[in-house]
Amino acid sequence: MAPAPQVTYYVIMTKQSPDGGFALRPISRLLKQEEEVVEEMLQTTTYMVVARYAKKANAEGLRGQLHALGVEVLILSDSDIKSHLFMWAKTANSGQGGMAFMDFTEKPLFCPWADIAGVMLMQVKCENGSEATLIDVHRVSTTIVPRLDAAHFDFSALLEQKGATIEDFLAEIESRGKIDVNRQYNDDHREALQKAAKDFASAPGTFQPGDDALTSPYDRRDLLAANLFSLVKAAERVPSDG
Image (cartoon, rainbow, N blue to C red):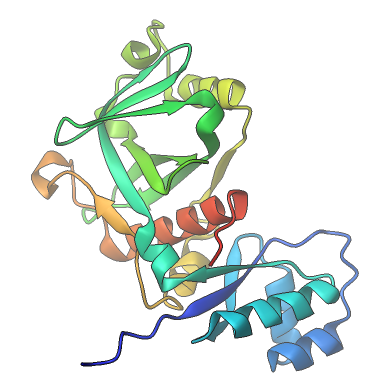
């Protein structure tokens, strides 16, 4: 019998405390990187993959050593990444108890307000050069992430509020879910996040409408980078066991 495929464990640095007061030399030695590279890692406002291991224990060992130096990191495995599913919503309704979604196969999904861990607002490029506005709703209880493409929604109808816009919808989620919307996936960070996406050998799952249901298909490279950034931010809010 052939051996099981090897799983990679990714050690991921996210935005660090601004008053960290890091000593570059020991961190540089630990990561086997030049101090200039380590300084760039420590200044990331999104995320960077700083190491990859075949064994979870090695990744956890590095995390412990970095913690002792004041640096906090996440660990994600290929299994963690593949367990995430971005589910495009065909319909959505906001109520007192939470949000009710319906996917493109008419399957319902209900998300209580208390189950919302965070929300991403992302401007993703399309093949025709336009941009799609995607909204991801991260949840505490599951790695299934409801996603709205703003072009498919009438926010006045969704909120039952005449003249309501996407900003009214986001304000509603922030207020009821007691969270802040992350808006970092845009032109300011796009290039860095596309580069960071190349450090992963796996990708999260997607359940999206066919290209014929879209104004224009999403740019595949940009969508993958957005998916991985969304996943990392979800893991930052609700850490995985790796």
